[in-house]
Length: 536
Image (cartoon, rainbow, N blue to C red; front, side, top):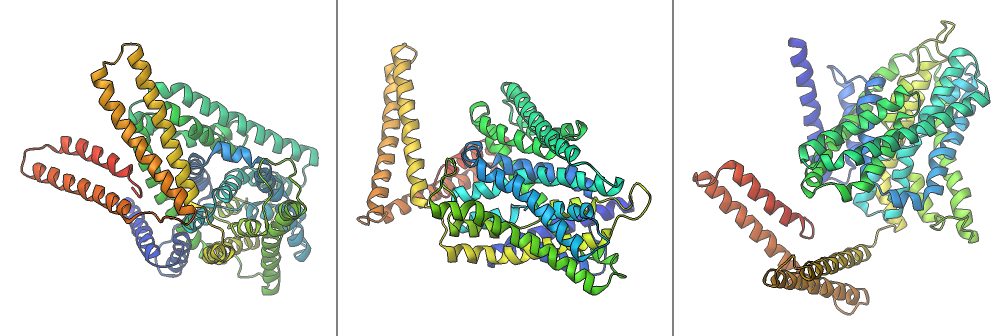
């Protein structure tokens, strides 16, 4: 009982640290994820228990939901439009980085074989986009670059983990043929894709039965674990299965879920993402003592050389690859058959600096076996751990702290006016469809004129407001008329009116005239109204 209480107290302490880090990051120009890593490092150096990274626990319990959340927030259509550069980054670049790092490490540390070097290379090859995306969204990074970074981060894990598995097998057993390795890679990718599609199809079939928000939430929370476990049981890529299931679920959910389910599900996943993301970055910081513990007998010059070549492989291969595959075709005017044009120099620089490594790298390198099949120690396992950890630390802290200033220097920002225009045009299209539905219902005598008339008038007033806002946006773009202060005053008035209603409902509840059950229902109505307002 005492041990259980200690574990609960430790978890609560971690949650407090995550909360404090978020409060500090909201007030200082320091990325939340980087601050968590630094706090984890500080905590690891203080007396007391540390949260040890269990690779199996991370890969089964933490990575599937985090990847699924990223997939739910992504766009299948946007990824499809940029599938060539995403594939180039998430497959080809990962393989090149793995073998480049493996070759460099084997060169400076002769007792490490190429296969053992590729074990390290595969671990450090896949960027973890969580930190880069959180900074990029706050800095207003253009949507296409967010899609590229997110798409790469979701799909590269499958490539890296499969490559790592083949390299570990070659090191432990003494060798694996190229044909066998290629076949294993293709089987893992194809099987993961098939299982992800199958899981998404089953969810789509069941969705009409899941109109209850609680049922919908339960299935959604279980989906990433089901997809991952199905992939692992079939000995294919469970990571890819999770990503594909999430992308398909996100694409089809607007047509099959109720509004109440979406509202509740969004809140649930936001909370899960917040807690797991915080835990992951604290974990990264707290692993330093475990990494250093096994390096007491390693020569300092050899250790330094291994770290430097690993960092060189990670930090130099990515910009070189983006320059060759994106910047040069852009400058020469080659489209390469892409639906979107290649990245220019500024965009390629931003994507280069978004290559931060994270918990996948640590989980994979910590999962390296201690001994080979012959019973001998795995070649320089402790040195591989340190090299991987330094890559994570340097990219997360170094690139994480400088990413936002770099974006400002590059002048890469999304266009809020363009996004607002598309949003208003979409609203107008929806209102036109609503008025057409009213006309059809009247024609079928399904709706009396005395009911349809006021509803049509309300829709028409709404449409007139949207046209007025579109007109103001066009005039503001041309520099003729700024957005009027009256519009901002109207929005603030809406917020004040909703707050007044909330306060009155609370007075009714406190006086005993309104039950808590009815209060929550009425509060939800006001919450939905507030959410429809700009900034809500």
